[in-house]
Length: 86
Image (cartoon, rainbow, N blue to C red; front, side, top):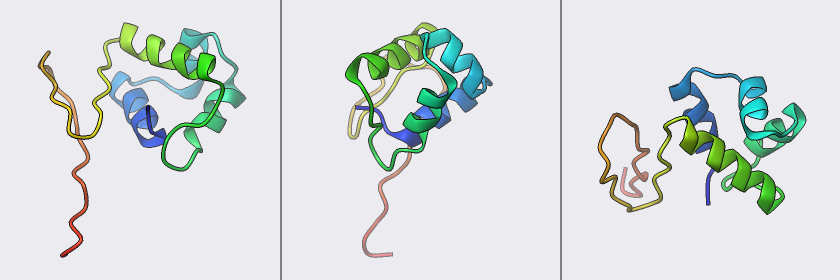
């Protein structure tokens, strides 16, 4: 699974806009926009999501799930889970 925030962050790390991601994944700009406007996990056709993930990975992005390690190293960001006691 990929969240809309991960998708936007991946684009930001690559320095690309929605149009470029659409071209890299072979999808339309409105499809990318709909995916990025999802609340939480990206919603859409599984094939479309697979194409976006493949395009991001080919461009050098490693998607990291909750609690997963990032063994390949490199720079990146991770959103800490919010503490309920704060």
